[in-house]
Image (cartoon, one colour):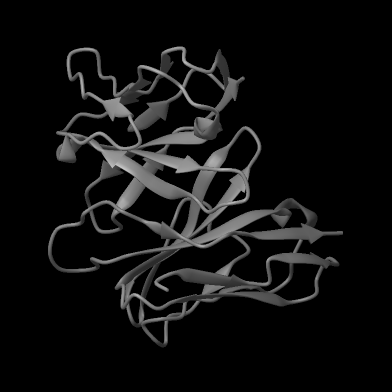
Length: 117
Length: 110
């Protein structure tokens, strides 16, 4: 089944303990992105990647890192999590990256709910 | 600045009633607009896009450039339409960025 898979789905951690949220897609998509969703603030883009080894900051990149070593994987790294990073995180992918038009369809993972105490 | 506004956080209608979820945008170029939907316990997914001019699950949305709106409509709401709906505007550029509204929660009551 074509999909975007995130892990873990739920995580409670403590301030300062490094964590990684994995994201994998099996659709050979070039474009991948991370969002966070907070009440009253909607979806905000954290980082995105146009293709392997091509990543860039979104609207709220502070406190996050990403890497894109393989086309299918786009992990989100919180080096030193803080309580203000408590949120619902979504990974998404899309077919087009650097070249060609973009159909505008993002495929989303199920979300990862992170709580930082 | 580009912006998408969904003025209603919550919209409650009865089954069989017409429903309209409002979306207004501000954008200086030619917009590409989308509606995404998130049903309970499901992932966010594309519902429809304005360039396709299609009807999905009975929903339609017409781009009105004069009013800078892209309202989502359905003539007869069903209980299974209850979900969170997001309007999004595509901003061309290097990051294939979608600008999101804050969403409208639609509740269709029996």
